[in-house]
Image 1 (cartoon, one colour):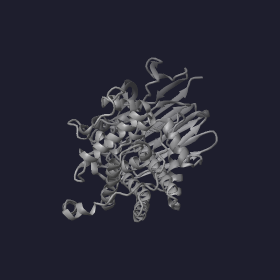
Image 2 (cartoon, helix red, strand yellow):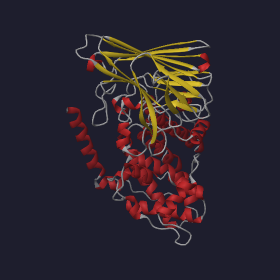
Image 3 (cartoon, helix red, strand yellow):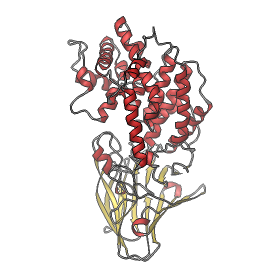
Image 4 (cartoon, one colour):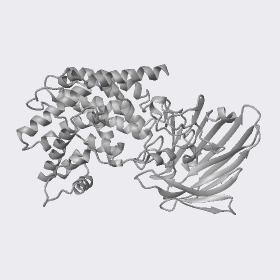
Length: 542
């Protein structure tokens, strides 16, 4: 309570300071003559997205470029719109389209933003948006300001200085990946503007702090999300490129962080060259992931374990399995974390077989639904989540103790992991054993539930295995087994030692915004004694 009161007082004091006449005056400065350095934006634009933007604005060869002042505050605009439009990442799409029309439209949209957003009290002056916007404006200055009037140049450069000054003052207001975006924008402005070298020191000091707090020793991100890790790695690469463009040596810690992050990302990437679906991410675009890793420049073989991030990877033959053996992220990073304790994903070759249900890029309702334990290949007890997701999106009941044991030979691999997420509810600890052998053609699992005290009532159990939409399934052997068929005809036989076997509907949000229909295998049971054990197997049909 006291903490929140102090934070509110700090915010009010900060708000008053930012809205004073002296603060307004302090941001004013004569525009510089030019940008002395313009770092290259290494990420390609999307021609289709550029054309969609022009079409939405009603821009064409006949109409010419249009003023779009109303775009910045639409009635139905949400945070997704705010981040996309006010971050100006779409400038790279317009540049990819090339030509005078896209150049002029981009210039008009920059000018309309300056005229309509000259007030740092509004959301578009959020630290991460300023950071992203400054980077985009500076990188693409040469294209969009070609043949621009002197009046526009002065307005453009004055706005860059004003935003950068405010960002320097408010840099500590951002958090998480947003703070990395803010640091990036301040560094770009410092390198591009003559006489603002002090911002370089400020940005690098802040970056070192964030690298230590956000990037775990094994290279994973504190959120435990592969998708957020990819975003953070892209920012780190951008920062290194900007320093090189300005003739400044990149600090040693930045190179080490990029190397570690690259290794962690490779562990969380499957043979289809896309990402695992843990903790709020989707598969991603393999070309974009390739490019980020190429720019990172690290070519180490991926590790088998991420002990700090809480992931284990097994590979044998053409089979690959990644298992979530970690705890929930700290409160600062858990807002989009999933209750996926001991969930795993399994691939064969370039095809996914057992998958998590994924997440949604824009819908909060879908995002929340995909966070449940039931949306992962794990065990649900009494239809409850393995960890408590509160209404505010953060976690209440969490895993306090977890264990992991790994054994491996050239012919087989074994994982044994446990968690106590359910203990506060019913005293039950979940232990899962995963065994992979026979050149990856034999996957066996054992889910053991043990209670520290005598159960007062039976506990309903459900072990779920969500299938990728490309996998077909059907009962065989009088309903005692399930035959799975992958693209190309590879077949697998699934069986279990106990419990009721069911095939139920499921959904997959591994990519895009439209959920895809699929199926899930469910083993239902009831725990009435102090211990219960269910074994299951997945064997390739030869």
